[in-house]
Image (cartoon, rainbow, N blue to C red):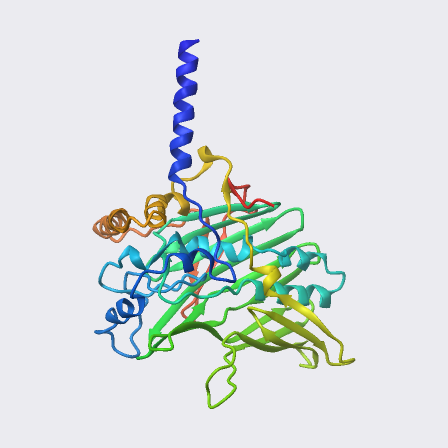
Amino acid sequence: MEKNAKIMDEAAEEAKAQRKAVVLTAPLALEGGLAAEHRPPNLLKQVLSLFRNVRPGSDLTRFQASLFETPFMISFAYELVLSSLFNMPKSQLQCYGETVYCCGEDYLQECARGKSSLERFTSVVAWSLSTTRPAIFGQAPFNPILGETHHVSKGSLNVLLEQVSHHPPVSALHATDSEHNLELIWCHSPIPRFQGTSIEATIKGKRQLRLLASGENYEMDSPNLSIKLLPPTGADWLGNVRIKCEESGLQADLCYYKSHVLLGFGGSCRSVKGTICHSKTLKTIYEIDGQWDRVIRLKDVRCGEVTVLYDAKKAISKLNTPILVAPQKVWPTESARVWGEVSRSILNKDWGKASEAKRRIEEEERKRRREREMNGGHVWVAKHFSVARTKDEGWECWPLEQLVPPAPIIVPP
C-alpha cells in the first residue's frame, strides 16, 4: 500500500511539474491581444539602433534574431542576441498555428459544407482572409529552434507544426479533420530584405487546402509584409494573393493595399480588392472589396447583389486560449514547453531571468549545429515532414503521416 501510494505521489508530482513547464498564452487577436500588453518602453529607439550597420538591399534571412512579429514566421536576422524585451511570450510556431485553430466563427468547416463548387470556393476565400492577422511592429515571437513542434486540437481538427529548417527559417504545417473531411498542408519560408527605411518580406512556399469529400484541392499564397522603420512606423500586409482550384476551374485574385484619401496620407492600410472568376475564360463572377480587419463584401456582377463575405470581428476577436489537458503526453519539442520558462518570465516582467533562459536555449541550438558540422556536415532530418527546395527559392513539405493525432493541448469550445 505504501509503495503504491508513493508511486502515485511521484506520478502526481511529475504531472504537476510537466504542467508547470508548459506555458500557454492568449492568441493574437484583432485588437493585438497579448502582444500589445507586453510592449517594452522606448521601442522605436531600440529598434532603429539595431539597423545602423545594415545596408539597403541586404538579405536578412541569414542572421539570427527575430525583430518583428508576424504569424508567418518572418525572422529578421542579426549578429547580436536579441533582448527578451523585444519578445512576446510565445513561439512563431504558435502564432502560425493560431491562424488555423483560433477563429471565433469557424470559416474552415464552412468550406466543406458548401453545396456547390462555387459556394465552397467563396468559403475558401473567406477562410483564407481569416488567416490574416495584425502584424505588430517591434515585438517578436521566439524564433523556433530546429525540430521544434506545436501540436493542438480544436474539436475534430488536429494541427501539427514543425520547424524543418532554421537557416533559412522554414515552417511546415499539417492539419486534418476526419469529421469534416478536410486536410491542410502548408510550407512557409520568408525572404526579408532591408530597403533603407523599410523591410519587405516575400513569403515563399505553398499553402494547400484539400476538401476530400468533393475531391477539390485549393492552392493559395500569402501577401507580403512591409515594415516601415521611420515614423509613422508600422507593419502592413501588402501585395497580391491568388487562390485557385483546378478541379472547379475557379480562381480568386486578391490585392492587399493601403488606400489614401488626401495627398497620400490617411486612409486604411488594411484594404482588399479582388475578383472571383473562371480561370479559363477569366469571366468575373464576383467582385470583392473591403478591409480585412473589418468587413469584406462580395458583389455578384450578374445581378448586383452584395453580401458579406467575411467579418473580422466575428472571426478574429475574443479568441479562446488553448489549455493543457494531458501534460504527460506533451512532447519535449512542444513550443509551449521549449519556451515555457522564458514565457513565464516575460509574463512576470522578469526580463533578466527571461533573457538568461532564452540565451541558454539559443546557445544549446548553436551547440547542436556545431556538432552536426563537426560530424561531417550531418544533415538534420525532420521527424514529421519530408522537405525539399523548389526552383523559385521556396520550399515544399509533405507530411509523413496521413492523419494528425489528437493533441494534449486543446482549444476549448
